[in-house]
Image: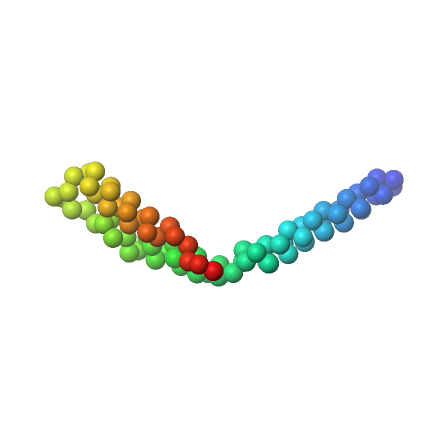
Length: 79
């Protein structure tokens, strides 16, 4: 029974800490436009310029074009 004097305050402090982190995340915009980010990932994989195979290109040229295409999609939209 004496252990409850330790566990109850610890659980209250843990709950307050979790709520504090959640409130910080809400104010920092961590949960803004969650669906948009997922759609950007899907759209980026569907429309990759330079991803098509060209038999006239060497492997190095094709890799350069693919990396340039993926670098363009890595930038996040300004909030």
